Length: 188
Image 1 (cartoon, rainbow, N blue to C red):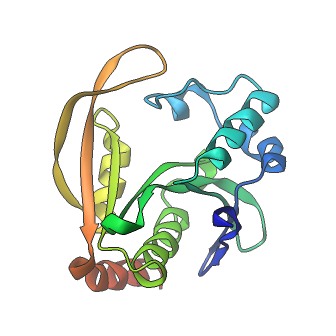
Image 2: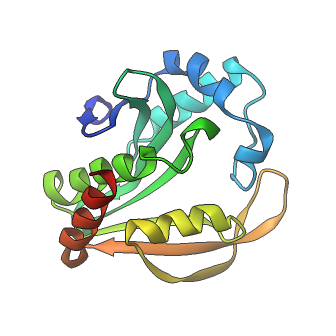
C-alpha cells in the first residue's frame, strides 16, 4: 500500500502519517506557522485528524509524520502529485514545530524524501514550491540545492482568502548526486 512507506536516516525517521498522530502534531502548529497554507489551520485535534484523513485518502500522496531519532514528533511532510509515468513528484505540505527550525530536521527529512524519489522510485524530477511571500521557506528550499524556476503569479488562494504567488523550484536527476552530497555534508 502506498501509505506504508517508512524511511529512516540520520536524525529523523519518516513514518506513514496516521490519524493517531494528530494529537501530537496539532499542538506544534500556530496561526503564524500556518500562514500562507491553502487550507485553514485546523481548529483543534479533531479537525487536524480530519486533515490527516484527507491527506491519506489522496492516492498520489505519500504523507509522513517526521520524528526525531527518539521518536519525538517534529512535524509532517509529503511526496505529492506523484506521477510515476511522467517521472515526477513534488515535496510539500512540510512544516515543523518551531523548536525544530534551523537545525538538522529539514535537511535530514529532505535527504530521505529525495533519496526515495530518485533512488527507490527512479523519478527524474522533484518539484518544491512555497508561497512566494514565505521567504523563510524559499531560503530553506534554496539551501537544499533546489534550482529556482520562477514564480507562478496569482497561483494560490491562502486560507485567509488572499491571492498569492507561488515560488517554484526543482531538483532533477542529474543534480541529485551534488544535492545529496551537500545534504550529507550539512548533517555530518
